[in-house]
Image (cartoon, rainbow, N blue to C red):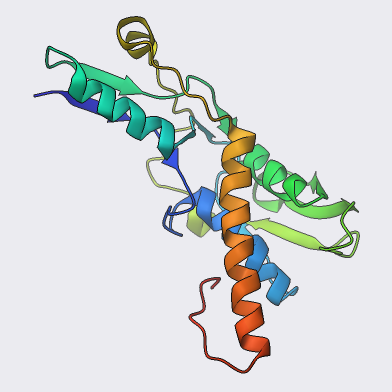
Length: 193
């Protein structure tokens, strides 16, 4: 039997209990109710995030390999949760500014380059909440997929910015569809709460 050790692999189908989906979905819920804030725990934790499409390709390659072996599937690069939040907001033309430190750190809208998503400059959008700190937090999660590269020629093709774009486009499409239906007085599932 082969064993695959998969580091964080994300896609639009990711559940909302995972920080990447929580960040992406927050933006759409924020468009509905601009009084909301995103609450996160340790925004300095570093994660090795890759796209699920790349990881599924590697799973298939593992199954094609002649000998059963253990494999690590990862990108080999890390990004802090704080930077992931910044990149997600930048995708829709919003620049964030972080102020404070520790439990008092907050993120505010610094610039809004988008006419479509016009947010007030200075609007607080993120706060730290101690309830979201994990009791056994791991500050750095990074994988070494060099064996997969050397033996199978696998390398992830989808970069983090492209992953964020994929996730954001998917949620924005759902948001637009729900808004259209709601404006037409149809009931919808609330996917952004």
